[in-house]
Length: 340
Ligand code: SAM
Image 1 (cartoon, rainbow, N blue to C red):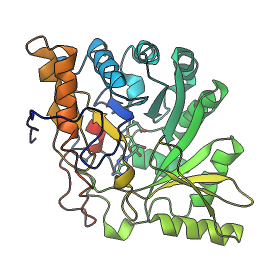
Image 2: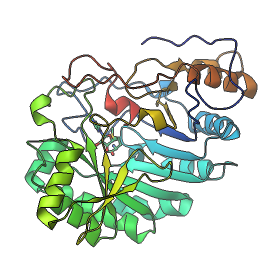
Image 3: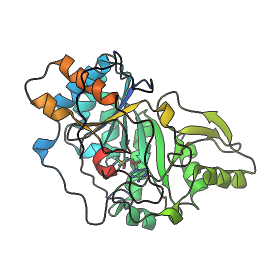
Image 4: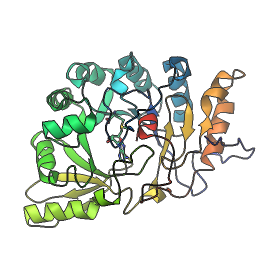
């Protein structure tokens, strides 16, 4: 992995060279997952890192506190699967208590949410995005390699019952779920939650999917228009909560679409990503990263020194992503290691 240099001059606020303000941090709390979705994890697997290489909860909380001082307001825990890291409920509680943090959210497969939703909500988890790529039990088991759709549905319902805001995340892929757009939407609407579709991004290890599997946001809207007999109406974004653009479907409900490939939203990007091993990534689609853990664990670094390094890394945030639609090239990092 290329390391970003720490440069001397840094802007005075948490914004980049394009004047994009950063208010959102995604934190991967583990590189391990209880599922192994085929578009995310290569068949041969991904080498797992040793526990001592992971940021401790104290280190994660310290970094978030420093970033909150610089303007970060929303934190999303991801992974791997965040619910399998021991003690994640207490991590949520600590992050929720940080001055300046307005919302703690999580991206999860919900496999364990049947029992974890209530304690997580009590600890301050306000919102979850649950990965749900198909409702067909056989296809779900095949895609996730070891998933259980019934358990996921119970997990989703437990999140709703615990009072969290819930969305589903469906990676749109022809050959997997192009015939399930309506059923996935209706599954969500019936439970009072928002369905979201994400265009597949060609990351390392996702070789099973290629150009012929492309299923774009326009095609998703066409399916909805055909089924409901009227074009979905654009509603705009979700106020800095995420990159989805929302559409309302007459006779249905609201649906979010993340058109990462066909109409990218880099110009409004407000996010940074912290990997489980403490690398700070300024873009999902580039491999450059700042090794924050070494700074944190090296000469006992003061808060200002760490904040300076973060600003310096941010000043090098690229203007746009470099996903290669052919599936070749693009970032070498795996989605399971960075958390989407
Ligand atoms: N284990 C959690 C889960 O299943 O939601 C969090 C980690 S997962 C890597 C985060 C999100 O990234 C999931 O919604 C997943 O569907 C999405 N994702 C993974 N690989 C992707 C890809 N190549 N393109 C688009 N989204 C992807």
